[in-house]
Image 1 (spheres, rainbow, N blue to C red):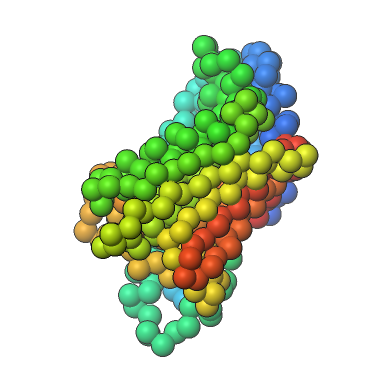
Image 2: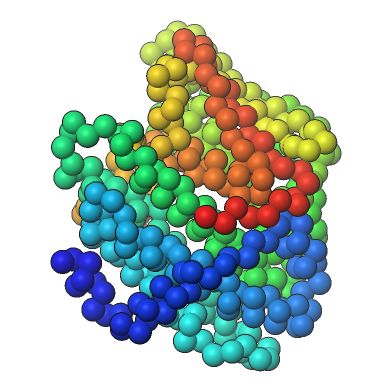
Amino acid sequence: MAAKKACQSFSKGLIEDVHRWSCLKQTGVSLRYMMEFGSKPTDRNLLISAQFLHKELPIRIARRAIELERLPYGLSEKPAVLKVRDWYLDSFRDLRTFPEIKNMNDEKEFTEMIKAIKVRHNNVVPTMALGIQQLKKGMAPKIVYEDLDDIQQFLDRFYMSRIGIRMLIGQHVELHNPNPAPHVVGYIHTKMSPMEVARTASEDARVICYREYGSAPDVQIYGDPGFTFPYVPAHLHLMVFELVKNSLRAVQERFMDSDKVAPPIRIIVADGEEDVTIKVSDEGGGIPRSGLPKIFTYLYSTARNPLDEHSDIGTANAVTMAGYGYGLPISRLYARYFGGDLQIISMEGYGTDAYLHLSRLGGSQEPLP
């Protein structure tokens, strides 16, 4: 019933259009292509980019809107999921009603519109997390979460697609920056120093640890400070921040009541031919082997969602040490988006090593779920 109710604000024609567009083929873009294309943001290139997005974004958004309507266990009817579905339908409608882009005036208006779409979707991840909480609340406790594998796979597809949509919009919008920093092409830094990004991300994570516990273990970073390669600094920051935050929390909680000094977290940056690998090592006690399969799921977290039932979505920006349990699975998707990966190896009773592999070649196409 709830699904029907939410649909009434959308015309039958729009819903049919969504179904039609969801069957069209998506077109993936590589990091290298984004970099080469964006290195000359002439009017002609901006026009081509806008025309591409005008066709591509409705396909990607329509696919997700359809999936949001077909989720198992009644997840599609949860109020939070209906809200996300409505955001997707609103954005689809905005894109489809926008006229053909013929000149730079059209391009400017289109850029403003997709900027607004990106903002509309800012809270998709915590809102979906709230939908999962609403689902779990109504479920019998005896349901085994392994049975929810299809929801897990849906969320992987859904969030991977979201990373791609936000990358394409953000890249296009950033190309309009009249004074880009040196070596910056939209969201991409062609000479990014992984050591530098790791340092900033670690400091940010330590600030949060201080705020929560009153102290924070040291972070030591090893690698060649002069080494650079093309990547998206915002993506790398998010991943390293998450890994260091987890390590800080584990070490802090293990040594909180101990007379021993908390051991440092060690980050090693290695530049190989194919991959740049960043290893984050801690002595925070590790994870039992039986718990390892669970760390990449969206369904296990015991942490409180910053958007609980009663909070205002607009105010839920506080980052906590526990987050809402989506940090690792989403970090892995960011790594995979440009052909990398994230692996966690643990020694129970000692600590955990996280290996973040980033593809150095930049030639792999976006994964298109």
